[in-house]
Amino acid sequence: MASDQLEVRLRGKHPTEDLIYDRLVDAIIDKHLRAGQHLNEVKLAEAYDVPRSRVRRVLERLRDEDVVVFELNRGAFISRPTVEDARHVYEARRELEVVVVKLACQRATPADIARLRDHLQYERESFDRQDPSVNRIASEFHHLIAKIGGNPVFEKMLSVLIRRGVLIQSVYERKSGILCLTHEHEGLVDLIEQDRPEEAAREMIHHFDHILSSLDLSETRRLEADIYEFLKS
Ligand SMILES: [Zn+2]
Image: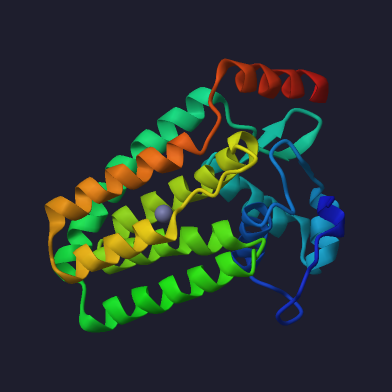
């Protein structure tokens, strides 16, 4: 779906930049926007009924998070991550998730555990009905753990890496691939509830081994990605 055909559900006449940002991120996560796709600043401004400068600020924010790139005289595009980007992002994300899950073990309240279990139920249902947003729902589980970890600095860093991970996934996922396995999420919630940080950390590493193995970072895929980049220019 082209950016100008994006379904836009306005909340009020002049949506805030945060709302436009959230809509674009959701469109990436749900694969309405793909890596390498052009973002037409004028059409986005018309769609959201806002000045172009406001759309530009949102795009600049996404550029700062390496989700969007600006090309001279051509405008804004969704980034196309390389194999090296993929390895670096997942390596950083795994280390951060290990820290965050340990904090979540220490700080989770019974209400937090109940929220995690509600989310797991939602994940299972979305998986069973083959919801196209299943990967977004699985990503929200990781956001929730970061929130429960109670450190907004880690939470923000992780949000950026999760968004970049979604883009990487859209380029490099295997056809069969489901990235997050719900039963592994269940195991993590059990360990958080029982306040077993070292085991939760090991489980998180194990989870990331699976996530990485569901990506095709082979030389063949690297060449395909490069060829696409070449054809685009
Ligand atoms: Zn996961």
